Length: 266
Image 1 (cartoon, rainbow, N blue to C red):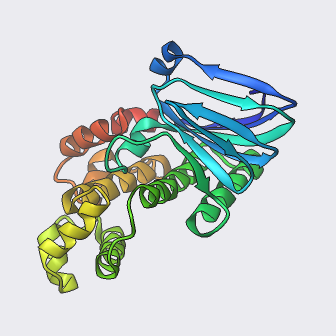
Image 2: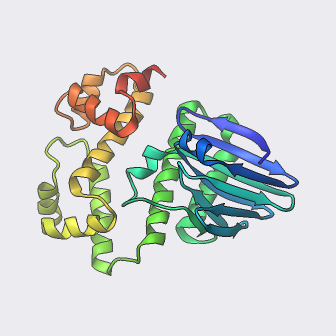
């Protein structure tokens, strides 16, 4: 597809594609060198998307998510415009319950899907006014919501109680992630539920209390590394619940592929 306006941060990329017609193919060899997901958001016209034997017609109000390391084809028979967001694989793989995708025909006309589409359009519209860290931070929020949308597509809604438990637990972890004593058991005691209830609620979303706590802490660290350049990595580690800078560095590299120091140097 013909690329129009482009915005690229440290990890994410957003392209406005415009063309009268096109037939774009990513071969198996190209796919192996490309470790990112592609989120397609049609703005005008229609796109025909094919991957791994699946085919869908994407129009405004729908979207598609193209899996990494797999060939695909996008056919545009008539003039169209679309936003294409490139998302690093590790940003989605850590939030999804298992091998995903491709997904086509995501409903972006209502509910969470509409929120995701509106945010992507807003980032595209404001790309010139955003700094690199601001652009990445906005894309990270889009990715988080997109993963929730994808998980909802793949799994039926949980019984009401488990869905409520999951929502409350996620909010609790966001509010208390910096507490070094935060554990699944401590959380269960504070919330008045059994640890087993919490484990079952999070299991549906493909995670555990320990993984959820670590993920939230690492995201806090990443935000602080970009924002508070005068604060040492050791101080950030202690302020976000890690026992030491080395423990933080090991977990951070496993999650994001770079060390805290390398991310800050960018």
